[in-house]
Length: 479
Image (cartoon, rainbow, N blue to C red; front, top):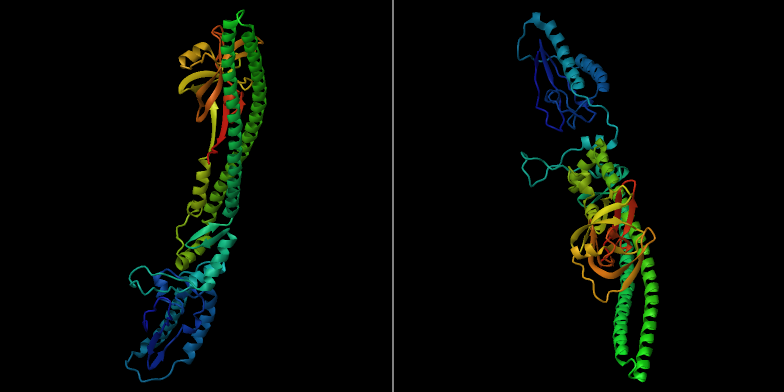
């Protein structure tokens, strides 16, 4: 028997196996064309050269038995006498008839056993596999061919992406949950605007405090000058003496009123600062929560993109819409990530380690006027406090007219000090300008410099003695 292909089966076309058996004047032709029904693609070249249906896919196991029966019927009914073009030896007839059956059965077995993939669990897998490639006219056939899928296949791909929490936007994909994160970030804009307004109000109140301090200082200077004038006229000019005394009394009354006004204004500033710090903490907490949500979404997307069905859907979108075939979770969230990173630059948070001494005091290395100094962290102290020796080392200038203060120490002792303004105090990345400071009188030699509320109050802070840390938070509120 002679077996041959009528024509090599083209990929995606109709293949017909014709087996020609020349046996003493009979020609047996068996066509397997009617039994091509399934659209299961095979990647094995040997199987593709055997039995291929009209879409280029092998037939399934369930069709093998009907094909056997039909082949048997055709072999019995299609033998017709003809004028043989070749004389064969009659002794070989029976063997050649059995060879025909062997060849037919071999073809059927190769067609069914070659490569039968598992049934697809999703309609998109079947349709995407069955979709014939469509060549673009602008590329030669030797190069990689662009493939476009039908509208129904693309619709199924969109449905799968939607169920996976994704949707196409232009030539990219967007995570549905990112919309909620974007709304939360939009709300941050309003929060930050409120912080800026409240910071301006606080700055205004602090400016009033500074003006009152200037007026008090000027009045105190005037009091000194009036006392000098009074000394010159004492006993010589009663009228001038009485006039100067009246001016001194009026000036001192004004100083008393200014100090009372300063106290109230300072209390107002403290309340506004406390409210601002609280709102800054809420703002920072919102930013931290958004970061956690975004990180969780990135992890979820990375897992989702590994799903086989989602991979096929992305391939369909790549072919039809130009979505990158290798798109990743980072690519999908890139825009919102950049937006959040910019917001995070406005939030400063740091946990600063503290040193603890045997007496239980917590120490930190701070910078005063850009020079390092070791200080006790004391939220119970109203002002930053320096010893006279430390102030000298830091080159802190003490004006002759600096206000005199009476401080109560932790042990209950009272001590005199002069109030000055430090150009800057910084701990870690947290810096405050124009910080009020009390410089102790020289006799307080055993006192330690203290980092008090005139600095700490500028920020949201938390002292953790157990963890020996100072946590600080600040939100940039510059417009």
